[in-house]
Amino acid sequence: MDLTTAHDTNIFSYATDQARTIVYLHYVDLIICFGILFTVIGLVTYATIKFKARPGDAEPRQDEGNVKLEITWTVIPALILLFLGVLTAIVMNSVNPPVGKLQADVIVNAHQFWWEYRYPKTGVVTANELYLPEGVNTLLEIRSADVIHSFWVPDFGQKMDAVPGHPNHLFLKPFARGLFTGACSEFCGAAHSLMRIMVTVLSPQDFKAWTESQLKVPAAPTETEAVHGQELFMSKTCVQCHAIAGTDAKALVGPNLTHLADRKTLAAGMMANNVDNAAAWIVNPQKYKPGCHMPKMRISKEEAHDIAVYLEGLK
Image 1 (spheres, rainbow, N blue to C red):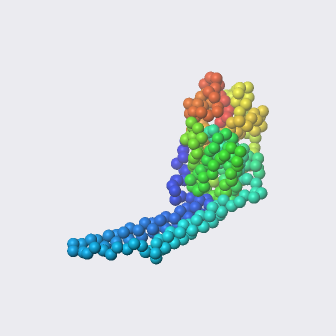
Image 2 (tube, one colour):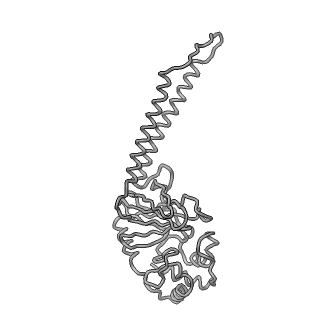
Image 3 (tube, rainbow, N blue to C red):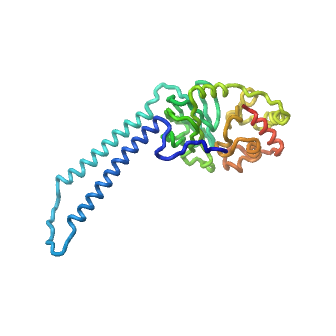
């Protein structure tokens, strides 16, 4: 699995307008904090040198209070906190304004332990790998199908909890193309750390082409192994959980497998997407992601291989 092309991630990196605003607020916070730090260090250093006790010094004058000083060190911190509070409120409203009656562009539905992405305006349904258009303010609706999860791509700035029965919303306006990575950031079970997020930002033209390709029904298999794999997929329990456009597989329990071959990874970013890894996953998914809802299958390695060949032909 080659993720070398993914953007580097750190607390100061940003790839959306919202993240840039948050990072700039962070800069302001740091400047004020360092200003306070150096002011305190300077005053303590000055007082230590200026008023250091020396041999022969008389007892210093004893002051019981200084009203002006006490007012000063109360008012100045209060003004700093007020400034930061107002600035933070402005930023919060800027990066995540009220949704009102806006319809979500993408519905992000978190599952143990994978991500479902639905584009209600176009009808595209995919899993684990999110695609967004560059320069478009995209509204994400964050949901959960089971327990509390949290959607977070550090380069996008905001972290949003996925709470069962309580949809949350997130605006993202990417200004950089490429691959961005993240992960579920709320403990959600045994395989929490294996619930990765991959986001690809495309130009508006490429995003439109991707959308059109996702709406196409994959071609029927022609190779012997793939044909046999399709027969096995439809006759065994696969169809009770998964959906593939253009077939009788229409279940909504597990990830939608239409155009699986176009994805970079399997198992929510845990394995490179190829026939061997797909077959290994089909035989025993619990080996790679403990606690996932897909059970260990009673299926031979040969059958798993043929099913994998079929799935890896879905483009």
